[in-house]
Image 1 (spheres, one colour):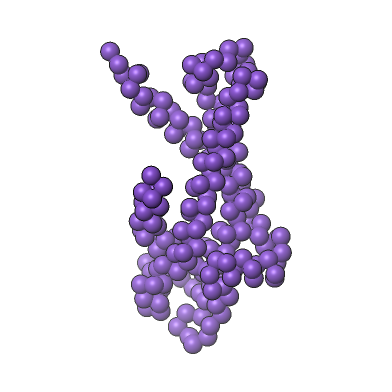
Image 2 (cartoon, rainbow, N blue to C red; image 1 turned 45 degrees about the vertical axis):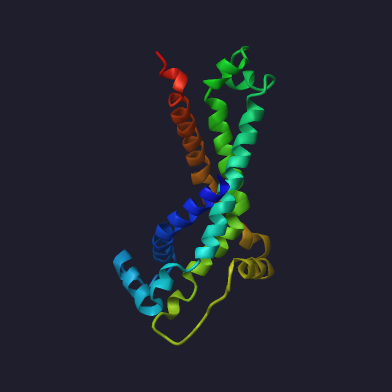
Length: 205
């Protein structure tokens, strides 16, 4: 199961990373690109196909860690909130049996929100390094100059901590929490709803 998930993640990243590289480069200050097409053309001209996959290893590590951490936090928080001593505070009901608890969505929504915020905070340092790997050297395109700062994600983390400390590790974390917390909550809710209404016993005649 775990092997299949990793293979699926790798395949999906082969399609995702090129677009992510282009998006990250377009978003930085004083970007030399006029459009997505212009960015794609210039990246290929300067670096070839490997330019589209800059930061692939870092993206893979971030993706695996974020996904694993999200599910771990989500499931543990959800089970905690469904405890008989906790559930009534979320559903305003004295009933705490499993069948009743199963259809309560507030704990799922809350667990999703917590999982999103915890994961975003913990993975943020890796995300910062990933973004910098994808965008470094951008202002020296077409020249012989080289300003590569990070060789890989581990070297990047070491440099980030040494040069910027905690502020560098948490750079941009607040906007991520504002967006990913609610997004994670709704994603969890939708997942649970689809899972619930896909159950065989609901369709039995």
